Image: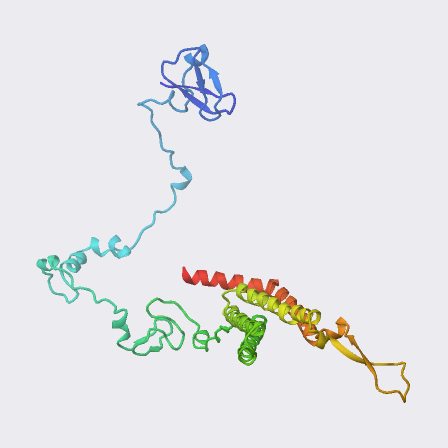
Length: 345
């Protein structure tokens, strides 16, 4: 008979192993507290309920009926008890119902071993759509070739309900596929300026005499052509770097042609071109017309219109470069690159 003790830490009832010796160290499986078996624990009897008092000769007597219930009448029914509960299997009519079919004819024993006729399956898919049918939800007519009820919007194959107003409404127009205005306007302006400069450079390179000016116009035509390419790439959302590089090359040509060359020409003009005739102020009105020659000042020798145009183009380049590096333009090209990567994947 197993012996039990109570854990002092958690109060759990522990069953001691058989033939346990005093002084042996054990551990509680619930709280993991270690304890030592004493002489009293090793020799104690089991505390499990019912094991000590249980015996093979034990009996249990049912409680007697109270005397107050002896005078109660028992339930009775008129006629046969089988007729009262309508139990045909307990009457003679059960044999007739088992041995005969619904027509009153005797059943055939061989019919028990015959396979039942295959059940007719409900047509689905194309076979169901080949004929008109009734809706399983509202009873409306579903035309041939359709599975969606036109009255309630129930799909006869899946049982799902669809809103007819939403399904038959016209689809929303597709979003515009072109670039936004803050990209299209500067891109088109840069492309148009590139086309005009390319045509002008081509005409002037043919009209001027061979030399430095002819090479300058040809260089301007090459830069204008690259600017057209950069503007196209910018409008397509490919890259903004090509357009910025074309503008940088253009402003370099502008500084050389419209600012540096006029200053160089003003400082190294020939003597005849730099001299100007000045009338003698000390002569009277009746004196003969005598004049003196002097060199024109540097300010008068500079081509002010060309230099002013060059400075204006530099400021325009600076403003356009700041805009091309602005956050809206960067966000647009970042989004476009992400879309192109997702499409390629």
